[in-house]
Amino acid sequence: MTTRFASILGVAAVSLAASVCDQRAAAQTVNETPPELRNVDIIEHLNGTIPQDATFTDEDGNQVRLGDFLKAGRPLILQLGYLRCPMLCNLVLNGAVDGLKEIDFSAGKEFDIVSISINPNEPHGLAKAKRDQYVIEYDRAGAVNGMHFLVGAAEESKRVADAVGFKFELQPNGEYAHAAALFIITPDGRISRYLYGSAFEPKNLRLALLEASEGKIGSTLDRFILWCHVYSPGTGYVLFASRLMQLGGAVTLVALAGGVFILWRQDVRRRRLAGSASAHTNS
Image (cartoon, rainbow, N blue to C red; front, side, top):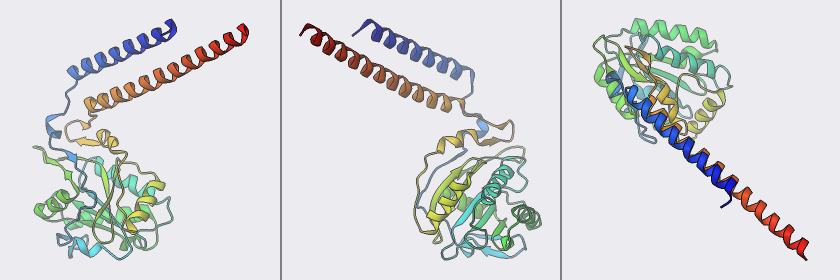
């Protein structure tokens, strides 16, 4: 091993050790999971089915079944939250509408949107006001037939939440701690994809809807986004610092390993070239 390569390896080792120490120190000063978020998560159930017989009241006061919104060839965008949510639910819906406005598919034609309240005390009149607000914001012909806001008994919304793996927690102040995501459902009621966060790229929305319309089941590569999109009624957004530190540590390891490997290859190549040149000179 050359002196140069040994030095590089030493620097890498020191850097990694410093990174680990920084993470441990930070972990000691940051509460890993606030108490109000210990039961908050999203557990993916790709290809699982939603309870089509779950019964709710729609924005017009009509009794409906979740399965009523599944139509042949038309996937469903499902959102769970509550109408009086002080922040995150509105951000998710705003982000969904902003992204959907940029694609050529239209709600009520190529797909439908259903938002279900997990708060059993919210009235259908509030659901109607929310639906009308987003119909105006979306500004597409026929959208009123493709956007649905449902309220109902806690048992029914819990059935849907359990089916898609949406774990939330009622807080002492009456608010709910929950995560941010959209659930893409196939026309026959299967979970096709999870889209995390409160901002959604139009191309990702379009692809998810296209896949779901064909009955395809996707995979999730961006689940780590969820860690930055969990709402605590007490503190607002909560960043799961320890999880991000774990992710950062893994990235650091990969980066250091990759860098050391590249430098090793370069060092070997230089020694071979030097050996070849020396042999050529001697000959």
